[in-house]
Image (cartoon, rainbow, N blue to C red; front, side, top):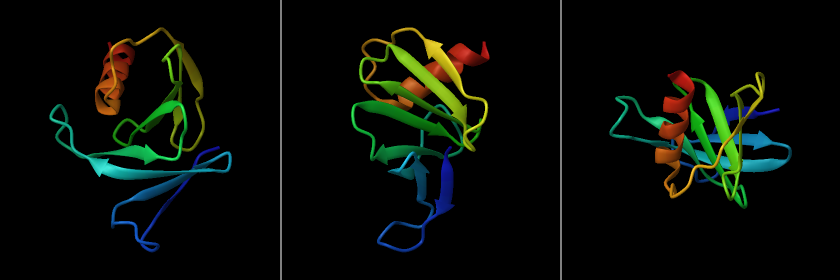
Length: 107
């Protein structure tokens, strides 16, 4: 289950969110994207060999294996887990990957 808390100490910048999932600590920072008018938090560390993207506006977290063969998602509270299959090739930027997933799942 995903748990989050606002972090104000320990050298983290204001607005940074710390998420714990199965004893892994992930650090998210607000990131602006040209496609969206509001900043979205993106996980920037803590997961080895996985791409993880969090979208606060839609309330989902997406993660994948390194080859993007299996993409999973859940709500920020850990509910509504789902698995999305399909390889996303030539995508290295996490924000672009996130946007592609949202386009695919909202059409």
